[in-house]
Image 1 (cartoon, rainbow, N blue to C red):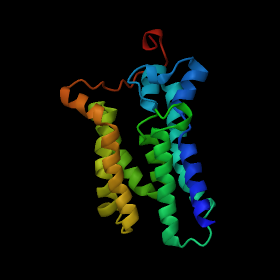
Image 2: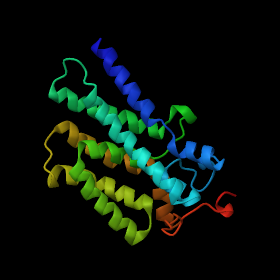
Image 3: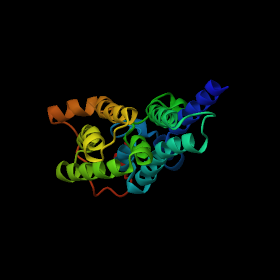
Length: 217
């Protein structure tokens, strides 16, 4: 019975993470598949580039919320007879399931985003102080370079350092999760990294406010 309970919770987290916010906003409000425009990525950054902040900010907030909610569900619906240590593993499992759902969403052919927003949401639930510090790093790099991909990769690499050395986390499972993030984000951004090395990566334009016809063609 406990195993079934765990499977159902993990499945719920995956289905929650699979909600393709960017794809649905593009199709329902603008009549486009965001994956066929801009970078082709179903994430908030591409939505902002193609459709503007009015569409992109809500997408980002929902994607972050998915990760946060997945962890909270593990706390709100605890598996029977779980110890506090097992609860941590369950929270981590729910977080990972939500992120995988975002990257491989079942609702739209398993082609989703890169998971940064959903990872951030899960991180807010698990490492709120660490996420705040990493967010500062992300903003500084983005403001300096205008590369969202580079900012995401650097922030992910800094994350385990902040978790382990700055906030002093000593739980092996949580430390391992932070290192997993430092591997996962660069992997999902491997094409961006190649473009960065070739000098072909697009910089983020902070002035974009709304969609225009040239962005949709």
